Amino acid sequence: MRVCIVGAGYVGLVTGLGLADIGHHVTCVDRDQARVDLINSGEPPFYEEGVAEQLRTHGGERLRAISSVAHGVLDADLTMLAVGTPFDGEQISLRQIEQASRDVGAALAEKDAYHVVVVKSTVVPGTTESVVVPILEEVSNKRAGRDFGVGMNPEFLREGNAVADFMKPDRIVLGAIDQRTQDVMAELYKPFSDAEVVRTTPKTAEMIKYASNSLLATLISFSNEIANLAAQVGVDAMDVMRGVHLDKRLTPIAEDGSRLWPGILTYLEPGCGFGGSCFPKDVKSLIAFAEQIDSSMPLLRAVIDVNERQPGKMLELLGRHFPDVKGVAVTVLGMAFKPGTDDIRESPSLTVTGELVTRGAEVTVFDPAAHQPVFEVYGDQVRYANTLEDAVADADAILLMTRWPEFLGLPDVLRSQQRQPVVVDGRRLLDKGSAEVYEAIGL
Ligand code: NAD
Image 1 (cartoon, rainbow, N blue to C red):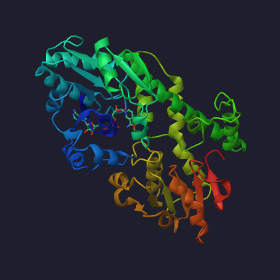
Image 2 (cartoon, protein in one colour):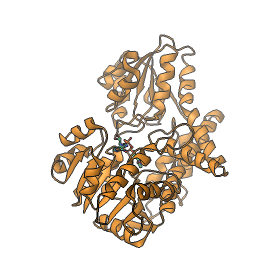
Image 3 (tube, protein in one colour):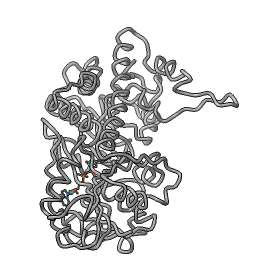
Image 4 (spheres, rainbow, N blue to C red):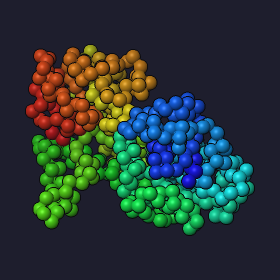
């Protein structure tokens, strides 16, 4: 199939490369010319495992990038909207979706053949039918369901695992306004014959995406609330959560007596909070949406509230040893919101780093992938270490914020040097005895 993807960000480009990999011909459209040029020169515009390899294989062959939506749509059978849907502080911003819909609508006006438009971006329930469809119809002067199809196909890929997640989907949700659209969307994903397909309405598809992310965010805040109480009553939250994990509804016992340890357990561990471009934004957008329609989501409000306090817990633990951090050499290990990506959007590390800088600490940061985006925020206000050794050599304290596997080497590095900083483990990555002075969330 010939596919046009409007928005070549994380989702658009990973989706485009995945679709190229299964044999489709993909045109990625982005309004950012620098991004288009990078993609066409074979350079991924962001760090994500597997993207560079796929771009080497498919770039210039089955995938190209351009900046004109009209050209992309005219050359395709199906167009996906994968533009950003940020939270503007009060509600989800649909500005990019509206603009992209207008651009696609204008191209549809010039096109005779049947075309399918699919919303891939995360949008609040009802958006596809009440915002995208009216714009497409008005600008194209054509009718949805007759002249073109409209669908909603949420994306579940996890940054850091995006390529693998796209190539091995656990589910494919196809929300569509009619059967014809749904069949075209099913055809697109036909090679993923093992994946469970949910055929449904656009509104249900939109809701599935929010329910999925809200559940995961809720598990994290639940674990963190339990962890904070565990620490206060003097028990280790890791022991508590391990006892919880052993419920066989979470870790089923197989026929041969062995236990299964599902990935969901990683959301049931103590930590310094969730970040990224999805969980905080999606949960806040859903709460705001509910309130607009006179509903309320007290549980999800609490999920956000607990999460926003977690970076402060790291500073509290640091404060036990350095009540005043002015002039204290603090190393922040991990700036990306999770390992495997350079994405620092809403990362708890940003909050902590900002607070340390404001309070006058001498901050060093080390992240295996994210120095460039951090530089764009903090510039020369912090020092950027090149190696783990360099990062901790002169530190008075270390805050471990991201579960990068590289940081597992910290105990060895500390053993090899005289200076013994305070280690505050925000991800419970290290053993309790792995530093002379060890503090941690939930301990
Ligand atoms: P992003 O900000 O990385 O990328 C969006 C891209 O769209 C940008 O490159 C921007 O230049 C481009 N763009 C915006 N308007 C345009 C227009 N009118 N024409 C052409 N290009 C345009 O965003 P993202 O992280 O890829 O997220 C995209 C959507 O997918 C969001 O709704 C997000 O919530 C959702 N989502 C993201 C993830 C994730 O892990 N990042 C996972 C699942 C779903």
